[in-house]
Length: 417
Image 1 (cartoon, rainbow, N blue to C red):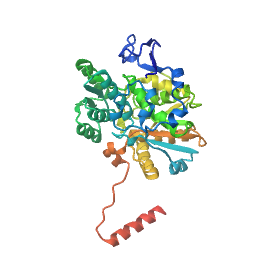
Image 2: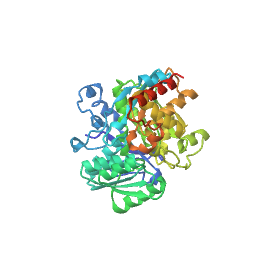
Image 3: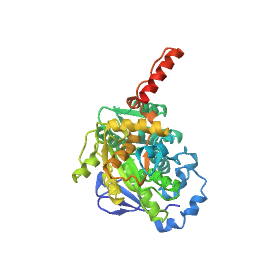
Image 4: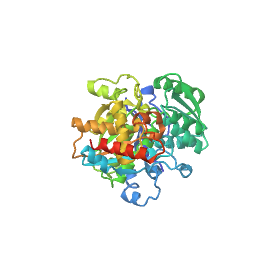
């Protein structure tokens, strides 16, 4: 049973029949990103606290009534979602923060939050009779799509910029995807994928274009709320590239608020790298979004021309949140800090939200007495080369106990200096 009511264009506000196979607004073109609206009154009769108490499906598919997909193939899918929400006791103490949680999305099948979007994309492609799925990506969307397409017997054609990290490229190739490495930046990569998808008639998984992908990603917010007994934290910190993820997080909390399951929508902190920060730049100057350089180690959020700007900006505005940018150096320090204090290994884009939290505490955007959830979006093993930059190389010793004793003594002296 579908509870989808209609599509609504985020530009012109025109509504469209949800049964039509639309990706963007027919009147506004590619910039007319669509939003999927639900019949919340009908949903309230079906999705309440008892619904969740009686659910034994511990994956993102427990939220199927809040997704625009048929459930026919769900039982064959890999397990996506219901990732751990850890209380970060040691980290919150070091930050001087009242309450801190980390949502570890690196434990999804392809090791990132993007599995949530790719999962619904693959199901929708099967539902519509496609045999090939495609997208452009800096890495995580690509590897997640290749993963789930392979499991469900679909072919995938993936376009990545030549700077894509080796860990993610290896994933794509292992999953059997047809990988096109584009000699250009993400803008060039996206444009080629768009032309190719139209030309060959493949299913389009590009996140900012396809409105159902927000719906898949929003399940991370549904989980956070449920794991906190429907009492979400004051703030949720999100790394931002094209804007789809932060828009999705807002949509998940908005759905629960409309259903009366939570009494507030958390404030959202959108975090970018100073090496690629079009949203932050636009916010600081109170001007329209402009193309930015793509010059950051956080490849997953290195998007100079965000394709989902309106939803992302509305998410921060409507949640009374904020935008902030952090340096790559700060991001590397956050990788080490999250790993050494909480045992969670995040890739650069995955820990950018944590660096943003630290900066927001310094500037007073977030107060020490507030509660915060940081969404850690991807596993550090996806980008081993940048992980090396965050740590010092191990010492090399001769296989002699006296050498080890000397080293341990020196190390101890340095710690107490």
